[in-house]
Amino acid sequence: MSVFGRGRQSTLPTEGRVPGFDGAIGWVNSRPLPAGALHGKVVLVDFWTFTCINWLRTEPHVRAWSRAYRDDGLVVVGVHTPEFSFEHDLGRVQKATEERGIDYPVAIDNDYAVWQAFDNHYWPALYVADQDGVIRFHHFGEGRYEESERVIQRLLGLERELIAVEGAGVEAEADWNNLHAPETYLGHLRGERKGSLERLQPNMWGLAGEWTTTAENVVLDRAGGSIAFRFHARDVHLVLARNGGEPIPFHVLLDGRAPDRAHGEDVDEDGRGILDDSRLYQLIRQREEIRERTVEITFEEPGAEAYVFTFG
Image 1 (cartoon, rainbow, N blue to C red):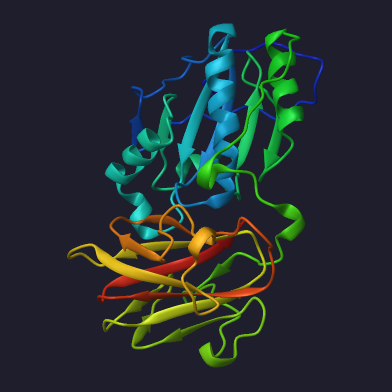
Image 2: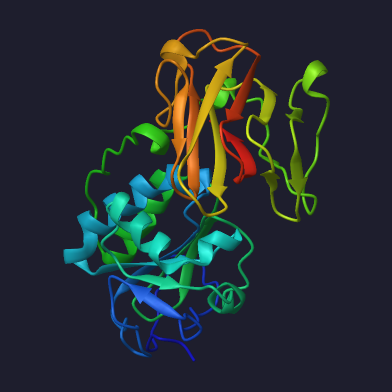
């Protein structure tokens, strides 16, 4: 059943009706949205998961649209569909919404019921529906922000200057001209491009020390183990978790040295960082010449779990 009423909007293509959110196991920032609750509203549905760098870079735009157009009749509904096991934890999702300043409703889709109802396949994925619950626009991934906002305005019957949005920190737009390193998973289910730590080729990664490889990650069994990647990009991110216990100190080297001014948000100039939660960590942000380099992360205690490298 659709959560919307019936009607017509002829200025944009029609892409079917928006399903309900009945499959959500919980909600953040809202009570459950029943059938009919969104009738008469323009609705933007945003599928996300909190460790996804592509979603993180789109969120400043979605957040800005929600705040700018809510009084005009726009409702943003986030759908958090987890990619990794630890992303099923409601407390972590709540923390992510607080850290990102998300104040719109978020459906918790741990069972992929809403994802499947939309026949969705991507993070992030954006669907915009008119006041009668008909999807008039969709976009997968990053970009097309101006077009997306124009669709929102058209459905709301508005014509005004577009919002200026500039993400900061991990939410900053990627340096696409210098981004030559691919998203790389480390577990055996989707892992690829693993090589020798001593002779890493571009876009390859390797391990030193005692590690166990599982379906979705690699887990450090003994203190002092390292993971390295040969990359060409401005930013380096790594999704990390810890297997219980105390926070795990780690140290980042860039071409064998402390990163200095090239350190990311989650390490200092000497390359020191703390694995204190399960999330995406920004290890490197190059502020000068961007070239092919090697990043190496060494963990001082066992239990570190590494999932995926992403770049920006």
